[in-house]
Length: 120
Image (cartoon, rainbow, N blue to C red; front, side, top):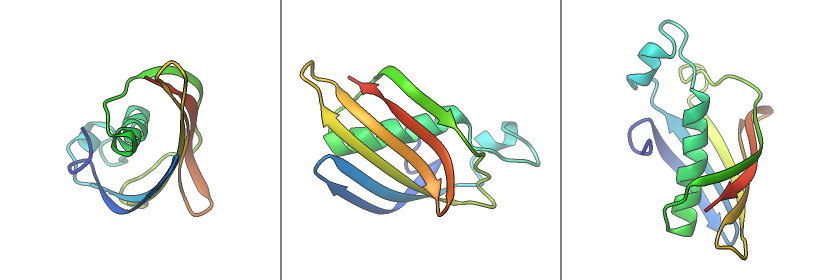
């Protein structure tokens, strides 16, 4: 779990089928020492974990990625230059018990990641 260590949630709005939150990245987190020294960048796997944790909080259950139909990393996130990130996530229950998810990580006009997929 990255929440509370790698990032903290500043604001959250959880409506039926949609979550919008602003998180603050911890630029002092040890992961940035290796990714990368002198040029910290949020790893793509951490962005995906943020999406997963946001969905888990919304649906109040553990989930696991089943299918990623779209996963695009469009811009790097430097936690020193850009500590605040907005997460927009919509989700819909599927008949098989899974969750169809669309998510973006962005700040103002800069989109860092787009995701469409299924969790179960």
